Length: 77
Image 1: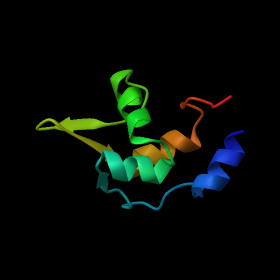
Image 2: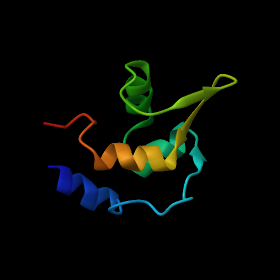
Image 3: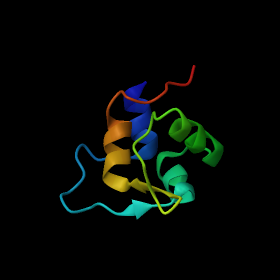
Image 4: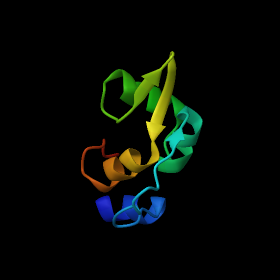
């Protein structure tokens, strides 16, 4: 299952150093192929890496890719 997710998302084995940008919720959802509402649910349950700056949710691209590459994400059944 994990390899199928990686193939769809086309996650590199390890992101290049310095390739870390902050994404808003919509950009994060597009990157990992989740619905925006699912992202909010994951944030609420603290299941996805995020930070909140002045009330705005932001996501590290590198941390999201690492999160997807690991097995720390919900598996659709």
